[in-house]
Image 1 (cartoon, rainbow, N blue to C red):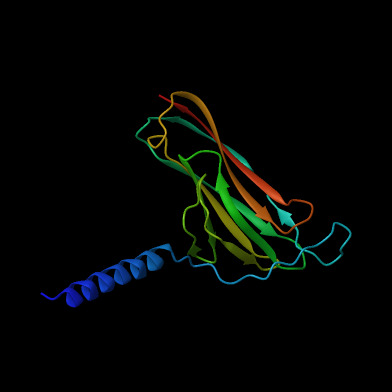
Image 2: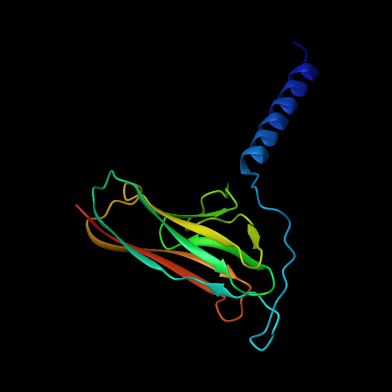
Length: 165
């Protein structure tokens, strides 16, 4: 084989790998224009969350459990949910809106993600706890964080607790 052919094959191979990487990292969120609001604004998004914590009960280190929390936009403008992260690498947050699931976001997630929730609509935040990723025993408390454009609730915290045996 000639030197040029080998170099061409290597460049093609690395280009293929880069393309696969971007396909895997691609997220199903759409471009969202962020609009900020003030508390005094009559026309604004408004978050309604009835439950923010759940006891998952007893678990083995090898178990996985999740809890779905409902977020409703009771305002008159689009609610933007973004920057989902968690308190530990063993805990992940996932947004579900109109049947579409986002990627799972954890403590070190750096991907840009935002989803608009229309007025009167609901989204689900799924908190997933996988103790086998960071094994600990006894009572644990883990959190998932979601940022919003609701000036009254700019950061939501969803908490799960468990007793790991």
